[in-house]
Length: 291
Length: 180
Image (cartoon, rainbow over all chains, first blue to last red; front, top):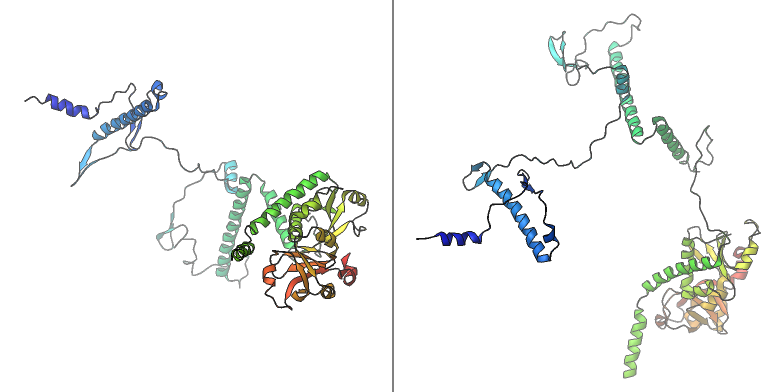
């Protein structure tokens, strides 16, 4: 039995999976994308709509066919009910969604270290506590700089007041150190804000201070009318009202007034589009006259 | 003295339209001589351009009045009509109420107009609309706001208020020192 005829007929119903391209199309299977850099036939694109549509449809079909061909050559894993192909990693580099982060302005210490060429020396996180005979963190929970493991005896320094509480002095000293560091952090933050705005930190602080001063001076019952003037107090410039000149072109004034009148009249007409009572009366009188 | 700003003009015109509607056009656009509105110490004056030009020589402190005073802006930015605007209002009024001779004096003493005193009313006058009040000899006496529409007025008893008093000619005597 000759089945070639039937086979040919069957084959002709489907399009070929063979796609020829002058330059092979680039595929990124991770994204399920196909990039075809071949020339497009312009004569077909400029032809009538039918030709153009069929041409474009054919192009996209061939691209998809190329991708599907490649997909079937991927390694597969077989599950109970289906076959899975493992997609390779994405090769195309996509731009990031958010802008690149800005470089943070340097803190005072960083600036100083740069000038003096001080390198950051890595310190170990834990230190050996000889008294306890164990390794403890340098700071933080159960750290060596905490007061929870304070010495049971502190020697009074030679120049100190013998009745002073040395434990209190220790606590106070630490508190002072923390406060000082906090102040410096705040200063670094303010300076970074100023430099980001393109101002000198000093100028920015001055301006903020002046604004606060103006605000506080106007906060009395008399809006600061009877306050004593400070030396170098900033002069507040209010908003100046501006009026049209007293004598101006009469025609211009007239047209301006007409314009405003039209606007006012429009609002009025909107309010009384239909005088219901008047309409009702008209209807009623018409009925009466009929009788 | 200065021209009105756009906002002020709007507030002013909105009040004025309650009495004379679109007839403001005749005030702005006069065939005889250009007229304008000017503000001096919160008061709005309706004055001819030539007089206004002459008044520019007088300082703000010294200028007491010019042209016709239409009313004044309150401190809250609203506008109040004055009795001095009556001739212009009477000329172009949309809604008019004529009072009988026995109702003239009560109105001129600053009372509301009761229904019993009404001689004639303009047709289809709505409620709460600015009206000008005349006596039967067509002399304008003052202005006010309608308390009832023309239709509803028929149902009111004779002592019911028909028009709320706003301003009357008696103010020339009663408010003599405050008016100007």
